[in-house]
Image 1 (cartoon, rainbow, N blue to C red):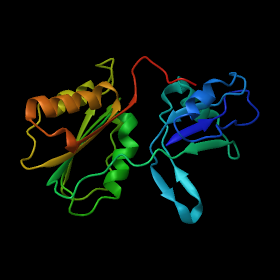
Image 2 (image 1 turned 90 degrees about the vertical axis):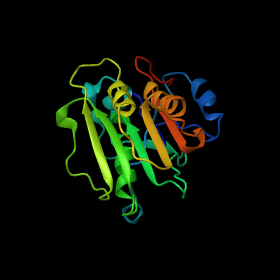
Image 3 (image 1 turned 180 degrees about the vertical axis):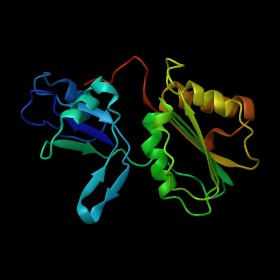
Length: 219
């Protein structure tokens, strides 16, 4: 989903009037005094009976627009969303799944595991900034193996340790489905490795670049 939120000092949220591919151009035509921030997130949980939608935002010191907004947000503040659809679409014939992500993909992967059938078999590679970010109370089927990788300040680009872990892993046999997301070099690197080095069909790989290291989204 796309999350729209007001810039600091804006008194109200101005949303685009269209939700197709034209919305970004419409947004960029607005002066910054009226233009909202917009960032991509994955829904962590949805509780329709309570009309609540839950997302997770990495505060990382309030360095980015979304983390700064989340740190100062109060009940009643306006926010808007555009539905971007579903990117996790495993086929019926896959024997198991490979799920790979950095901290930006953590909510999506945890949501996948929480809603997975009990029969799911998966290898999960998750890279996080520090050991303290590793979550022990993950709800998951018994056939899921978790591989946590903590950077601890060792690499400048998030996702590279997870990519190296996948490259060096002894993966299970049989046809499998891959879902990889995070900093752009991680999912593209996973796809390239699987196709080139392991002969995996491209059709069985879903890869999403959530963000680019050192670059901010327009807005």
